[in-house]
Amino acid sequence: MGRYVLRRCLLAVPVVLGVATLVFLLIHLIPGDPVDLMLGETAREADKTQLRRELRLDRPLAEQYGTFLAGLARGDLGRSLHTRQPVLETIAQRLPATAELALAALLFACALALPLGVLSAVRRNSGWDYGALSLALLGAAMPNFWLGPLLIMGFALALDWLPVSGRDGMSAVILPAVTLGSGMAAILMRMTRASLLDVLGQDHLVVARAKGLAPSRVLLRHGLRPALLPVLTLIGLQLGALLAGAIVTETIFAWPGVGRLTVQAILSRDYPLAQGCVLAIAVGYVLVNLLTDWLYAAVDPRIRDGR
Amino acid sequence: MAGRITRRRSPLILLGLAVIGLLAAMAVWGVLRSPQAPIQQRLSEGLAAPSWEHPLGQDRLGRDQWSRLLAGARISLLVGAAVVSVSLMIGLLVGGAAGLAGGWIDELLMRLTDILLAFPGLLLAIALTAVLGPGLDHVILALCAMGWVGYARLVRGQLLSLREREYVVAARAIGVPRLRLFGRHLLPNLAGPLLVEASFGMAHAIVAEASLSFLGLGIQPPAPSWGSMLAEGRAFGLLAPHLTLAPGLAIMIVVLGLNLLGDGLRDLLDARGSAHGAPF
Image (tube, rainbow over all chains, first blue to last red; front, top):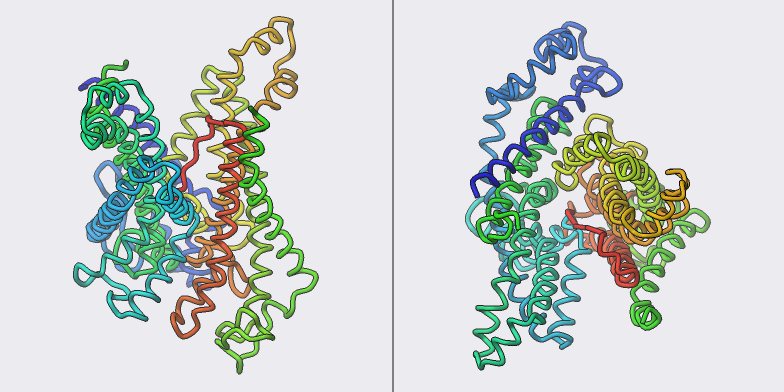
Protein backbone atom coordinates (compact mmCIF):
# COMPACT_ATOMS: atom_id res chain seq x y z
CA MET A 1 0.00 0.00 0.00
CA GLY A 2 2.78 2.41 0.99
CA ARG A 3 4.76 1.74 -2.19
CA TYR A 4 1.67 2.14 -4.34
CA VAL A 5 0.85 5.51 -2.78
CA LEU A 6 4.45 6.66 -3.10
CA ARG A 7 4.56 5.66 -6.78
CA ARG A 8 1.34 7.56 -7.55
CA CYS A 9 2.72 10.64 -5.75
CA LEU A 10 5.98 10.51 -7.69
CA LEU A 11 4.07 10.16 -10.97
CA ALA A 12 2.08 13.29 -10.13
CA VAL A 13 5.21 15.43 -9.72
CA PRO A 14 6.13 15.72 -13.44
CA VAL A 15 2.46 16.36 -14.27
CA VAL A 16 2.26 19.26 -11.79
CA LEU A 17 5.57 20.61 -13.10
CA GLY A 18 4.28 20.32 -16.66
CA VAL A 19 1.06 22.12 -15.73
CA ALA A 20 3.06 24.94 -14.12
CA THR A 21 5.29 25.19 -17.20
CA LEU A 22 2.32 25.32 -19.55
CA VAL A 23 0.63 28.03 -17.48
CA PHE A 24 3.90 29.99 -17.49
CA LEU A 25 4.29 29.62 -21.26
CA LEU A 26 0.68 30.70 -21.88
CA ILE A 27 1.46 34.21 -20.70
CA HIS A 28 5.00 34.44 -22.01
CA LEU A 29 4.77 32.99 -25.50
CA ILE A 30 1.62 34.73 -26.71
CA PRO A 31 2.03 36.94 -29.75
CA GLY A 32 2.32 40.60 -28.82
CA ASP A 33 3.29 42.25 -25.57
CA PRO A 34 1.46 40.95 -22.46
CA VAL A 35 1.83 44.38 -20.88
CA ASP A 36 -0.11 45.88 -23.80
CA LEU A 37 -2.82 43.30 -23.16
CA MET A 38 -2.96 44.11 -19.45
CA LEU A 39 -2.84 47.88 -19.57
CA GLY A 40 -4.16 48.51 -23.07
CA GLU A 41 -2.08 49.94 -25.92
CA THR A 42 -2.90 53.51 -24.96
CA ALA A 43 -1.26 53.27 -21.52
CA ARG A 44 1.66 55.55 -20.69
CA GLU A 45 5.10 54.20 -21.57
CA ALA A 46 6.32 54.79 -18.00
CA ASP A 47 3.51 52.63 -16.58
CA LYS A 48 4.28 49.90 -19.08
CA THR A 49 7.96 49.93 -18.20
CA GLN A 50 7.17 49.78 -14.49
CA LEU A 51 4.78 46.85 -14.90
CA ARG A 52 7.25 45.06 -17.17
CA ARG A 53 9.91 45.44 -14.47
CA GLU A 54 7.52 44.39 -11.69
CA LEU A 55 6.51 41.23 -13.55
CA ARG A 56 10.15 40.70 -14.56
CA LEU A 57 9.11 40.59 -18.21
CA ASP A 58 12.29 42.54 -19.07
CA ARG A 59 14.43 39.58 -18.00
CA PRO A 60 15.45 36.65 -20.27
CA LEU A 61 12.79 33.92 -20.58
CA ALA A 62 14.90 31.26 -18.84
CA GLU A 63 15.46 33.57 -15.86
CA GLN A 64 11.75 34.38 -15.71
CA TYR A 65 10.95 30.67 -15.72
CA GLY A 66 13.44 30.03 -12.91
CA THR A 67 12.00 32.87 -10.83
CA PHE A 68 8.48 31.57 -11.49
CA LEU A 69 9.33 28.05 -10.33
CA ALA A 70 11.25 29.32 -7.29
CA GLY A 71 8.29 31.51 -6.35
CA LEU A 72 5.96 28.56 -6.83
CA ALA A 73 8.04 26.43 -4.48
CA ARG A 74 7.74 29.18 -1.84
CA GLY A 75 4.03 29.58 -2.51
CA ASP A 76 4.61 33.01 -4.04
CA LEU A 77 2.44 33.49 -7.14
CA GLY A 78 2.93 37.25 -7.37
CA ARG A 79 0.46 40.01 -6.62
CA SER A 80 -2.86 40.91 -8.18
CA LEU A 81 -2.52 43.88 -10.54
CA HIS A 82 -5.71 45.47 -9.22
CA THR A 83 -5.91 44.76 -5.49
CA ARG A 84 -2.11 44.44 -4.95
CA GLN A 85 -2.86 41.50 -2.63
CA PRO A 86 -0.73 38.35 -2.90
CA VAL A 87 -2.35 35.99 -5.45
CA LEU A 88 -2.12 32.96 -3.17
CA GLU A 89 -3.85 34.81 -0.34
CA THR A 90 -6.66 35.95 -2.65
CA ILE A 91 -7.20 32.40 -3.91
CA ALA A 92 -7.05 30.97 -0.37
CA GLN A 93 -9.79 33.38 0.70
CA ARG A 94 -12.06 32.14 -2.09
CA LEU A 95 -11.26 28.45 -1.74
CA PRO A 96 -13.72 27.59 1.09
CA ALA A 97 -16.65 28.85 -1.00
CA THR A 98 -15.66 26.66 -3.97
CA ALA A 99 -15.06 23.65 -1.71
CA GLU A 100 -18.48 24.14 -0.10
CA LEU A 101 -20.18 24.37 -3.49
CA ALA A 102 -18.34 21.33 -4.88
CA LEU A 103 -19.18 19.22 -1.82
CA ALA A 104 -22.83 20.29 -1.88
CA ALA A 105 -22.99 19.44 -5.60
CA LEU A 106 -21.38 16.07 -4.89
CA LEU A 107 -23.88 15.32 -2.13
CA PHE A 108 -26.79 16.28 -4.37
CA ALA A 109 -25.46 14.15 -7.23
CA CYS A 110 -24.92 11.08 -5.01
CA ALA A 111 -28.24 11.46 -3.20
CA LEU A 112 -30.07 11.54 -6.54
CA ALA A 113 -27.97 9.23 -8.69
CA LEU A 114 -27.20 6.28 -6.41
CA PRO A 115 -30.81 5.38 -5.41
CA LEU A 116 -32.03 6.01 -8.96
CA GLY A 117 -29.23 3.89 -10.41
CA VAL A 118 -29.98 1.02 -8.03
CA LEU A 119 -33.71 1.25 -8.67
CA SER A 120 -33.09 1.34 -12.40
CA ALA A 121 -30.91 -1.79 -12.29
CA VAL A 122 -33.17 -3.76 -9.93
CA ARG A 123 -36.30 -2.92 -11.92
CA ARG A 124 -34.62 -3.28 -15.28
CA ASN A 125 -36.77 -2.45 -18.35
CA SER A 126 -39.60 -1.16 -16.17
CA GLY A 127 -41.20 2.27 -16.26
CA TRP A 128 -38.86 3.31 -13.40
CA ASP A 129 -35.83 2.26 -15.44
CA TYR A 130 -36.90 4.14 -18.57
CA GLY A 131 -37.85 7.20 -16.52
CA ALA A 132 -34.51 7.28 -14.71
CA LEU A 133 -32.57 6.72 -17.95
CA SER A 134 -34.46 9.52 -19.69
CA LEU A 135 -33.72 11.81 -16.76
CA ALA A 136 -30.04 10.92 -17.02
CA LEU A 137 -30.01 11.63 -20.76
CA LEU A 138 -31.59 15.03 -20.19
CA GLY A 139 -29.25 15.78 -17.27
CA ALA A 140 -26.20 15.01 -19.40
CA ALA A 141 -27.45 17.14 -22.30
CA MET A 142 -28.57 20.14 -20.27
CA PRO A 143 -25.75 22.69 -20.03
CA ASN A 144 -25.36 24.17 -16.54
CA PHE A 145 -25.41 27.71 -17.94
CA TRP A 146 -29.02 26.99 -18.98
CA LEU A 147 -30.15 24.98 -15.99
CA GLY A 148 -28.89 27.70 -13.61
CA PRO A 149 -30.93 30.55 -15.12
CA LEU A 150 -33.99 28.24 -15.38
CA LEU A 151 -33.74 27.34 -11.67
CA ILE A 152 -33.33 31.02 -10.78
CA MET A 153 -36.42 31.90 -12.82
CA GLY A 154 -38.47 29.11 -11.24
CA PHE A 155 -37.38 28.89 -7.59
CA ALA A 156 -35.95 32.33 -6.92
CA LEU A 157 -37.98 34.74 -9.07
CA ALA A 158 -41.37 33.08 -9.61
CA LEU A 159 -41.74 31.16 -6.32
CA ASP A 160 -39.37 33.30 -4.23
CA TRP A 161 -38.29 30.24 -2.20
CA LEU A 162 -34.53 30.59 -2.58
CA PRO A 163 -32.07 33.44 -3.06
CA VAL A 164 -31.14 34.48 -6.62
CA SER A 165 -27.42 34.74 -5.93
CA GLY A 166 -24.72 35.21 -3.32
CA ARG A 167 -23.65 33.05 -0.38
CA ASP A 168 -25.77 34.25 2.52
CA GLY A 169 -27.22 31.39 4.55
CA MET A 170 -27.54 27.67 3.95
CA SER A 171 -30.33 28.00 1.41
CA ALA A 172 -28.09 29.97 -0.96
CA VAL A 173 -26.09 26.86 -1.84
CA ILE A 174 -29.08 24.80 -3.02
CA LEU A 175 -29.57 26.19 -6.53
CA PRO A 176 -25.85 26.41 -7.38
CA ALA A 177 -25.33 22.86 -6.05
CA VAL A 178 -28.20 21.47 -8.13
CA THR A 179 -26.88 23.32 -11.20
CA LEU A 180 -23.33 22.07 -10.75
CA GLY A 181 -24.27 18.55 -9.66
CA SER A 182 -26.89 17.65 -12.26
CA GLY A 183 -24.43 16.65 -14.99
CA MET A 184 -22.49 14.56 -12.51
CA ALA A 185 -25.71 12.95 -11.26
CA ALA A 186 -26.53 11.86 -14.82
CA ILE A 187 -23.15 10.20 -15.31
CA LEU A 188 -23.18 8.58 -11.85
CA MET A 189 -26.68 7.22 -12.31
CA ARG A 190 -25.79 5.52 -15.59
CA MET A 191 -22.58 4.15 -14.09
CA THR A 192 -24.33 2.82 -10.96
CA ARG A 193 -26.97 1.12 -13.09
CA ALA A 194 -24.46 -0.46 -15.50
CA SER A 195 -22.14 -1.55 -12.71
CA LEU A 196 -24.90 -3.11 -10.61
CA LEU A 197 -26.40 -4.89 -13.63
CA ASP A 198 -22.96 -6.34 -14.28
CA VAL A 199 -22.62 -7.59 -10.69
CA LEU A 200 -26.20 -8.88 -10.46
CA GLY A 201 -25.48 -11.34 -13.27
CA GLN A 202 -22.45 -12.86 -11.54
CA ASP A 203 -22.29 -16.34 -10.02
CA HIS A 204 -21.87 -15.39 -6.36
CA LEU A 205 -25.15 -13.48 -6.49
CA VAL A 206 -26.93 -16.48 -7.95
CA VAL A 207 -25.49 -18.63 -5.15
CA ALA A 208 -26.51 -16.07 -2.51
CA ARG A 209 -30.06 -16.10 -3.86
CA ALA A 210 -30.11 -19.87 -4.21
CA LYS A 211 -29.13 -20.41 -0.58
CA GLY A 212 -32.20 -18.43 0.41
CA LEU A 213 -30.85 -15.06 1.48
CA ALA A 214 -33.40 -12.26 1.56
CA PRO A 215 -33.33 -10.26 -1.72
CA SER A 216 -32.57 -7.03 0.15
CA ARG A 217 -29.59 -8.67 1.88
CA VAL A 218 -28.32 -10.09 -1.42
CA LEU A 219 -28.53 -6.66 -2.99
CA LEU A 220 -27.04 -4.63 -0.15
CA ARG A 221 -24.35 -7.02 1.03
CA HIS A 222 -23.27 -8.89 -2.07
CA GLY A 223 -24.44 -6.68 -4.92
CA LEU A 224 -23.88 -3.07 -3.99
CA ARG A 225 -20.46 -3.34 -2.42
CA PRO A 226 -18.56 -4.55 -5.50
CA ALA A 227 -20.83 -2.52 -7.80
CA LEU A 228 -19.95 0.75 -6.07
CA LEU A 229 -16.18 0.41 -6.61
CA PRO A 230 -16.13 1.81 -10.16
CA VAL A 231 -18.70 4.39 -9.06
CA LEU A 232 -16.28 5.54 -6.37
CA THR A 233 -13.52 6.13 -8.93
CA LEU A 234 -15.94 8.04 -11.11
CA ILE A 235 -16.97 10.20 -8.15
CA GLY A 236 -13.32 11.10 -7.60
CA LEU A 237 -12.75 11.98 -11.24
CA GLN A 238 -15.97 13.94 -11.37
CA LEU A 239 -15.16 15.82 -8.15
CA GLY A 240 -12.10 17.21 -9.91
CA ALA A 241 -14.22 18.11 -12.94
CA LEU A 242 -16.62 19.94 -10.60
CA LEU A 243 -13.80 22.41 -9.89
CA ALA A 244 -13.85 23.39 -13.56
CA GLY A 245 -17.66 23.33 -13.75
CA ALA A 246 -17.68 25.74 -10.82
CA ILE A 247 -16.28 28.44 -13.12
CA VAL A 248 -19.60 28.71 -14.99
CA THR A 249 -21.87 27.97 -12.00
CA GLU A 250 -20.18 30.49 -9.72
CA THR A 251 -20.49 33.13 -12.45
CA ILE A 252 -24.23 32.48 -12.82
CA PHE A 253 -24.95 32.69 -9.09
CA ALA A 254 -22.33 35.33 -8.18
CA TRP A 255 -20.90 32.70 -5.83
CA PRO A 256 -17.69 34.12 -4.32
CA GLY A 257 -15.37 31.20 -5.15
CA VAL A 258 -12.24 30.55 -7.17
CA GLY A 259 -14.23 29.94 -10.38
CA ARG A 260 -15.79 33.37 -10.39
CA LEU A 261 -12.45 34.87 -9.38
CA THR A 262 -10.88 33.24 -12.46
CA VAL A 263 -13.41 34.79 -14.83
CA GLN A 264 -13.20 38.16 -13.11
CA ALA A 265 -9.40 38.08 -13.30
CA ILE A 266 -9.47 37.20 -17.00
CA LEU A 267 -12.09 39.80 -17.92
CA SER A 268 -10.21 42.49 -15.99
CA ARG A 269 -6.91 41.32 -17.52
CA ASP A 270 -5.34 40.70 -14.12
CA TYR A 271 -2.91 38.16 -15.54
CA PRO A 272 -0.93 37.21 -12.41
CA LEU A 273 -4.23 36.47 -10.63
CA ALA A 274 -5.67 34.60 -13.64
CA GLN A 275 -2.47 32.58 -13.93
CA GLY A 276 -2.65 31.70 -10.23
CA CYS A 277 -6.30 30.67 -10.48
CA VAL A 278 -5.75 28.41 -13.50
CA LEU A 279 -2.77 26.83 -11.77
CA ALA A 280 -4.70 26.36 -8.52
CA ILE A 281 -7.64 24.64 -10.24
CA ALA A 282 -5.40 22.36 -12.32
CA VAL A 283 -3.24 21.38 -9.33
CA GLY A 284 -6.40 20.88 -7.25
CA TYR A 285 -7.68 18.53 -9.96
CA VAL A 286 -4.45 16.50 -9.94
CA LEU A 287 -4.55 16.27 -6.12
CA VAL A 288 -8.19 15.15 -6.06
CA ASN A 289 -7.39 12.47 -8.63
CA LEU A 290 -4.45 11.35 -6.52
CA LEU A 291 -6.70 11.13 -3.48
CA THR A 292 -9.15 9.04 -5.51
CA ASP A 293 -6.35 6.63 -6.38
CA TRP A 294 -5.45 6.24 -2.72
CA LEU A 295 -9.05 5.75 -1.73
CA TYR A 296 -9.54 3.17 -4.46
CA ALA A 297 -6.45 1.29 -3.36
CA ALA A 298 -7.64 1.38 0.25
CA VAL A 299 -11.01 -0.09 -0.71
CA ASP A 300 -9.90 -2.61 -3.32
CA PRO A 301 -6.94 -4.82 -2.29
CA ARG A 302 -6.44 -6.02 -5.88
CA ILE A 303 -5.22 -2.54 -6.89
CA ARG A 304 -2.65 -1.96 -4.15
CA ASP A 305 -1.24 -5.48 -4.45
CA GLY A 306 -0.89 -4.99 -8.20
CA ARG A 307 -2.98 -8.06 -8.93
CA MET B 1 -26.67 -10.98 -34.65
CA ALA B 2 -25.20 -7.84 -36.16
CA GLY B 3 -28.34 -7.33 -38.19
CA ARG B 4 -30.50 -7.60 -35.10
CA ILE B 5 -28.39 -5.05 -33.24
CA THR B 6 -28.55 -2.70 -36.21
CA ARG B 7 -32.31 -2.92 -36.37
CA ARG B 8 -32.71 -2.54 -32.63
CA ARG B 9 -30.31 0.34 -32.19
CA SER B 10 -30.83 2.23 -35.41
CA PRO B 11 -33.49 4.56 -33.93
CA LEU B 12 -30.82 6.19 -31.76
CA ILE B 13 -28.53 6.71 -34.74
CA LEU B 14 -31.38 7.96 -36.92
CA LEU B 15 -32.48 10.38 -34.22
CA GLY B 16 -28.93 11.67 -33.82
CA LEU B 17 -28.50 12.09 -37.57
CA ALA B 18 -31.86 13.87 -37.76
CA VAL B 19 -30.69 16.37 -35.14
CA ILE B 20 -27.46 17.06 -37.06
CA GLY B 21 -29.58 17.46 -40.21
CA LEU B 22 -31.85 19.89 -38.36
CA LEU B 23 -28.85 21.90 -37.18
CA ALA B 24 -27.46 22.04 -40.71
CA ALA B 25 -30.87 22.99 -42.11
CA MET B 26 -31.18 25.79 -39.56
CA ALA B 27 -27.71 27.05 -40.44
CA VAL B 28 -28.45 27.02 -44.18
CA TRP B 29 -31.89 28.53 -43.70
CA GLY B 30 -30.31 31.28 -41.62
CA VAL B 31 -28.02 32.18 -44.50
CA LEU B 32 -30.59 31.90 -47.32
CA ARG B 33 -33.92 32.86 -45.80
CA SER B 34 -33.27 34.63 -42.51
CA PRO B 35 -36.51 36.52 -41.73
CA GLN B 36 -34.51 39.49 -40.54
CA ALA B 37 -30.83 40.36 -40.28
CA PRO B 38 -29.75 38.85 -36.93
CA ILE B 39 -28.11 42.11 -35.86
CA GLN B 40 -30.87 44.45 -37.07
CA GLN B 41 -32.10 46.46 -34.09
CA ARG B 42 -35.62 47.78 -33.45
CA LEU B 43 -35.16 49.52 -30.14
CA SER B 44 -38.83 50.45 -29.71
CA GLU B 45 -39.74 46.72 -29.81
CA GLY B 46 -37.16 45.66 -27.20
CA LEU B 47 -38.04 42.52 -25.15
CA ALA B 48 -41.28 41.97 -27.15
CA ALA B 49 -42.92 38.58 -26.46
CA PRO B 50 -43.28 35.97 -29.25
CA SER B 51 -45.71 36.97 -32.01
CA TRP B 52 -46.59 35.85 -35.56
CA GLU B 53 -43.97 38.15 -36.99
CA HIS B 54 -41.33 37.16 -34.41
CA PRO B 55 -42.12 33.57 -33.35
CA LEU B 56 -39.43 33.56 -30.63
CA GLY B 57 -39.86 37.19 -29.62
CA GLN B 58 -37.28 39.97 -29.65
CA ASP B 59 -34.31 40.72 -27.43
CA ARG B 60 -33.35 43.85 -25.49
CA LEU B 61 -32.42 45.70 -28.69
CA GLY B 62 -35.49 44.48 -30.60
CA ARG B 63 -33.48 41.97 -32.64
CA ASP B 64 -35.48 38.99 -33.97
CA GLN B 65 -34.70 36.02 -31.71
CA TRP B 66 -35.51 33.40 -34.39
CA SER B 67 -33.08 34.98 -36.89
CA ARG B 68 -30.43 35.07 -34.18
CA LEU B 69 -31.09 31.43 -33.29
CA LEU B 70 -30.60 30.48 -36.97
CA ALA B 71 -27.36 32.46 -37.15
CA GLY B 72 -26.26 30.84 -33.86
CA ALA B 73 -26.88 27.41 -35.41
CA ARG B 74 -24.32 28.27 -38.08
CA ILE B 75 -21.73 29.18 -35.45
CA SER B 76 -22.44 26.00 -33.44
CA LEU B 77 -22.19 23.81 -36.53
CA LEU B 78 -19.03 25.55 -37.70
CA VAL B 79 -17.32 25.27 -34.31
CA GLY B 80 -18.45 21.66 -33.84
CA ALA B 81 -17.30 20.54 -37.29
CA ALA B 82 -14.02 22.50 -37.23
CA VAL B 83 -13.01 21.41 -33.73
CA VAL B 84 -13.86 17.76 -34.38
CA SER B 85 -12.07 17.56 -37.73
CA VAL B 86 -8.91 19.41 -36.64
CA SER B 87 -8.73 17.58 -33.27
CA LEU B 88 -9.28 14.27 -35.05
CA MET B 89 -6.43 14.92 -37.48
CA ILE B 90 -4.02 15.96 -34.71
CA GLY B 91 -5.14 13.07 -32.51
CA LEU B 92 -4.64 10.62 -35.38
CA LEU B 93 -1.15 11.96 -36.06
CA VAL B 94 -0.02 12.05 -32.42
CA GLY B 95 -1.74 8.82 -31.38
CA GLY B 96 -0.49 7.13 -34.58
CA ALA B 97 3.07 8.26 -33.95
CA ALA B 98 2.94 7.13 -30.30
CA GLY B 99 1.33 3.79 -31.07
CA LEU B 100 3.49 2.91 -34.07
CA ALA B 101 6.85 4.28 -32.93
CA GLY B 102 6.65 3.22 -29.29
CA GLY B 103 9.71 3.80 -27.09
CA TRP B 104 10.66 7.32 -26.00
CA ILE B 105 8.42 8.97 -28.62
CA ASP B 106 5.40 7.19 -27.13
CA GLU B 107 6.54 8.06 -23.59
CA LEU B 108 7.07 11.75 -24.44
CA LEU B 109 3.75 12.16 -26.25
CA MET B 110 1.77 10.40 -23.55
CA ARG B 111 3.33 12.53 -20.79
CA LEU B 112 2.27 15.56 -22.83
CA THR B 113 -1.31 14.27 -22.91
CA ASP B 114 -1.09 13.66 -19.12
CA ILE B 115 -0.26 17.34 -18.62
CA LEU B 116 -3.11 18.51 -20.85
CA LEU B 117 -5.54 16.12 -19.11
CA ALA B 118 -4.61 17.76 -15.79
CA PHE B 119 -6.64 20.77 -16.96
CA PRO B 120 -10.21 19.75 -16.17
CA GLY B 121 -13.04 20.55 -18.56
CA LEU B 122 -12.96 24.00 -20.00
CA LEU B 123 -10.06 25.34 -17.97
CA LEU B 124 -7.37 25.22 -20.67
CA ALA B 125 -9.73 26.69 -23.27
CA ILE B 126 -10.60 29.50 -20.85
CA ALA B 127 -6.91 30.16 -20.19
CA LEU B 128 -6.12 30.15 -23.91
CA THR B 129 -8.95 32.48 -24.91
CA ALA B 130 -7.83 34.73 -22.06
CA VAL B 131 -4.44 35.24 -23.66
CA LEU B 132 -5.44 34.96 -27.32
CA GLY B 133 -8.49 37.19 -26.91
CA PRO B 134 -12.08 36.34 -27.80
CA GLY B 135 -13.37 35.60 -31.32
CA LEU B 136 -14.50 32.63 -33.42
CA ASP B 137 -11.05 31.57 -34.66
CA HIS B 138 -9.51 31.79 -31.20
CA VAL B 139 -12.36 29.75 -29.71
CA ILE B 140 -11.81 27.03 -32.32
CA LEU B 141 -8.05 27.11 -31.69
CA ALA B 142 -8.52 26.91 -27.91
CA LEU B 143 -10.95 24.00 -28.16
CA CYS B 144 -8.67 22.11 -30.57
CA ALA B 145 -5.74 22.61 -28.18
CA MET B 146 -7.45 20.35 -25.67
CA GLY B 147 -9.73 18.43 -28.04
CA TRP B 148 -7.07 16.28 -29.73
CA VAL B 149 -5.96 14.57 -26.53
CA GLY B 150 -8.92 12.19 -26.31
CA TYR B 151 -8.49 11.09 -29.93
CA ALA B 152 -4.72 10.62 -29.51
CA ARG B 153 -5.22 8.40 -26.45
CA LEU B 154 -7.92 6.43 -28.24
CA VAL B 155 -5.84 5.91 -31.40
CA ARG B 156 -2.77 4.87 -29.40
CA GLY B 157 -4.78 2.46 -27.25
CA GLN B 158 -6.44 0.89 -30.29
CA LEU B 159 -3.13 0.62 -32.14
CA LEU B 160 -1.50 -1.16 -29.20
CA SER B 161 -4.25 -3.74 -29.21
CA LEU B 162 -4.50 -4.02 -33.00
CA ARG B 163 -0.80 -4.58 -33.55
CA GLU B 164 -1.01 -7.88 -31.70
CA ARG B 165 -3.68 -9.20 -34.07
CA GLU B 166 -2.66 -11.96 -36.41
CA TYR B 167 -3.32 -10.16 -39.66
CA VAL B 168 -1.16 -7.24 -38.56
CA VAL B 169 1.63 -9.53 -37.40
CA ALA B 170 1.36 -11.34 -40.75
CA ALA B 171 1.47 -8.09 -42.72
CA ARG B 172 4.56 -7.00 -40.80
CA ALA B 173 6.17 -10.38 -41.31
CA ILE B 174 5.89 -10.08 -45.09
CA GLY B 175 7.48 -6.63 -44.88
CA VAL B 176 4.61 -4.21 -45.41
CA PRO B 177 6.00 -0.71 -44.69
CA ARG B 178 4.72 0.97 -41.48
CA LEU B 179 2.85 3.80 -43.16
CA ARG B 180 1.13 1.44 -45.57
CA LEU B 181 0.28 -0.87 -42.71
CA PHE B 182 -1.25 2.09 -40.88
CA GLY B 183 -3.23 3.36 -43.87
CA ARG B 184 -4.51 0.06 -45.25
CA HIS B 185 -4.83 -2.27 -42.30
CA LEU B 186 -5.04 -0.24 -39.08
CA LEU B 187 -6.90 2.93 -40.06
CA PRO B 188 -10.08 1.15 -41.24
CA ASN B 189 -10.28 -0.56 -37.83
CA LEU B 190 -9.89 2.76 -36.05
CA ALA B 191 -12.77 4.38 -37.93
CA GLY B 192 -15.54 2.98 -35.73
CA PRO B 193 -14.25 4.04 -32.31
CA LEU B 194 -13.17 7.40 -33.76
CA LEU B 195 -16.66 8.00 -35.12
CA VAL B 196 -18.14 7.35 -31.68
CA GLU B 197 -15.64 9.69 -30.06
CA ALA B 198 -16.34 12.32 -32.74
CA SER B 199 -20.09 12.33 -31.95
CA PHE B 200 -19.46 13.03 -28.28
CA GLY B 201 -16.62 15.39 -29.21
CA MET B 202 -18.92 17.49 -31.37
CA ALA B 203 -21.42 17.79 -28.52
CA HIS B 204 -18.59 18.79 -26.16
CA ALA B 205 -17.29 21.38 -28.62
CA ILE B 206 -20.72 22.96 -29.10
CA VAL B 207 -21.32 23.18 -25.33
CA ALA B 208 -17.77 24.45 -24.74
CA GLU B 209 -18.16 27.23 -27.31
CA ALA B 210 -21.50 28.20 -25.79
CA SER B 211 -19.93 28.17 -22.29
CA LEU B 212 -17.06 30.40 -23.39
CA SER B 213 -19.45 32.78 -25.12
CA PHE B 214 -21.71 32.73 -22.05
CA LEU B 215 -18.74 33.79 -19.91
CA GLY B 216 -17.90 36.59 -22.37
CA LEU B 217 -14.72 34.87 -23.57
CA GLY B 218 -16.01 33.39 -26.83
CA ILE B 219 -17.96 34.84 -29.75
CA GLN B 220 -18.34 38.56 -29.19
CA PRO B 221 -21.53 40.64 -29.62
CA PRO B 222 -23.25 41.48 -31.86
CA ALA B 223 -22.57 38.06 -33.46
CA PRO B 224 -25.23 35.69 -32.10
CA SER B 225 -23.79 32.61 -30.39
CA TRP B 226 -26.34 30.53 -28.45
CA GLY B 227 -24.17 30.96 -25.35
CA SER B 228 -23.98 34.76 -25.55
CA MET B 229 -27.74 34.91 -26.34
CA LEU B 230 -28.35 33.03 -23.08
CA ALA B 231 -26.03 35.36 -21.17
CA GLU B 232 -27.89 38.40 -22.52
CA GLY B 233 -31.30 36.85 -21.93
CA ARG B 234 -30.80 35.72 -18.35
CA ALA B 235 -30.41 39.31 -17.15
CA PHE B 236 -34.11 39.81 -17.88
CA GLY B 237 -35.33 36.69 -16.06
CA LEU B 238 -39.11 36.51 -15.93
CA LEU B 239 -39.46 39.81 -17.75
CA ALA B 240 -38.59 38.05 -21.01
CA PRO B 241 -38.31 34.28 -20.35
CA HIS B 242 -38.34 33.54 -24.10
CA LEU B 243 -34.79 34.94 -24.29
CA THR B 244 -33.54 32.23 -21.91
CA LEU B 245 -35.73 29.35 -23.12
CA ALA B 246 -35.03 29.27 -26.86
CA PRO B 247 -31.20 29.19 -27.04
CA GLY B 248 -30.93 26.80 -24.08
CA LEU B 249 -33.46 24.42 -25.59
CA ALA B 250 -31.61 24.55 -28.91
CA ILE B 251 -28.30 23.61 -27.26
CA MET B 252 -29.93 20.82 -25.27
CA ILE B 253 -31.64 19.27 -28.31
CA VAL B 254 -28.42 19.31 -30.35
CA VAL B 255 -26.35 17.85 -27.51
CA LEU B 256 -28.99 15.22 -26.77
CA GLY B 257 -29.07 14.24 -30.45
CA LEU B 258 -25.29 13.95 -30.69
CA ASN B 259 -25.08 11.97 -27.43
CA LEU B 260 -27.75 9.58 -28.70
CA LEU B 261 -25.85 9.24 -31.98
CA GLY B 262 -22.68 8.42 -30.02
CA ASP B 263 -24.52 5.91 -27.82
CA GLY B 264 -26.14 4.31 -30.85
CA LEU B 265 -22.87 4.06 -32.77
CA ARG B 266 -21.09 2.66 -29.73
CA ASP B 267 -23.71 0.00 -29.26
CA LEU B 268 -23.57 -0.79 -32.97
CA LEU B 269 -19.81 -1.03 -33.16
CA ASP B 270 -19.36 -2.19 -29.58
CA ALA B 271 -16.52 0.29 -29.46
CA ARG B 272 -15.62 -0.27 -25.88
CA GLY B 273 -12.29 1.47 -26.24
CA SER B 274 -13.97 4.86 -26.43
CA ALA B 275 -13.58 6.55 -23.07
CA HIS B 276 -15.77 9.57 -22.77
CA GLY B 277 -16.78 11.79 -19.97
CA ALA B 278 -18.96 14.89 -20.00
CA PRO B 279 -17.05 17.42 -18.00
CA PHE B 280 -19.21 20.35 -19.01
